[in-house]
Amino acid sequence: MIVDPVPSLRRIASEVWKPLTILFVWDCAVTVTYYLLPFHAPELPLTIFGSALALFLGFRSNSSYQRWWEGRVLWGAMINASRNIARAARNFLPDPQARDLKREIVKRQIAYVNALRCQLRRQPIGEDVIKFLEEQDKGKALARVNAANGLLDSTGRRIDMARREGMIDTIQQTQMEAVLVDIANAQGGMERLKNTPLPVQYRFLPTIFTHIFCIALPIGLVETLGFATPLGSTVAGLMFLAVLRIGDDLTDPFANTVHDVPMTAMCRTIEIDLLQAIGDPAPEPHKPVKGVLW
Image (cartoon, helix red, strand yellow):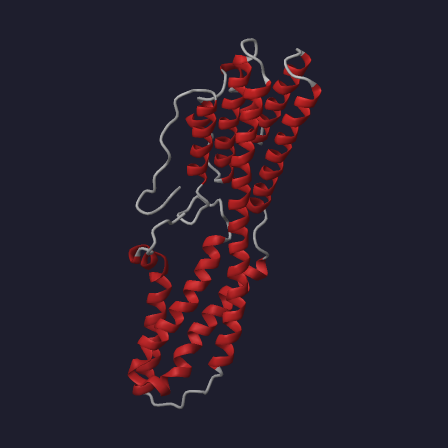
């Protein structure tokens, strides 16, 4: 997620320079052709076309932002649920007989959120997951297709084991299971966003219409703007191309790009809170790198 108050012009240029260059060359070609081979440029209803396209792109951008914001809300719920399961484990499981078990449950939750982050970003499970697991657990839960869900299931089994051994009662188990349900629901919402793209009409038609409009723009403006057509048409086209790109950037909030929901930073927040809850030393929060918080 870009956190700089002022967007980097270099980053913006790196994202739009290719279509903008093509558009500028096309605008110059239309202008030169108009003066070398005088012709009467057709009067295109650019105002009507532009207004309709702006509404279409605005609706698409809003839909993309709603997906991005929903991803952020789900991760906020994950942070709260992680704190809740750690607090329940710390308060319900008695010392000293359940000390190791409560620490294991808390550390498994840290491993779980990092495994979920890796799954959503299509990255391999790394050391930031494995280091929080017991040796006997590193192969079982992580061998499942959905490794994060495997870790969550094994946490539920440990809570049930604590109930069977008399460490907690059924009411306490029910309260902890309710938190696990909230965690599973948040994960399901994230997987839905990741695996369900915008309908093809939302992705394909705005792209086609925007490029058609940019092609027609200098033809309709050349008689009015004359030699200033390349500048005026390129600037106008840039605005439409930028809105189109915004929709593309926000469609997948877990795409491992600079526009991502900052899952790495939120996993670190969970790690800090949970380690401190059991009295272990915690790392420093993640800091932005070149204006981007990952």
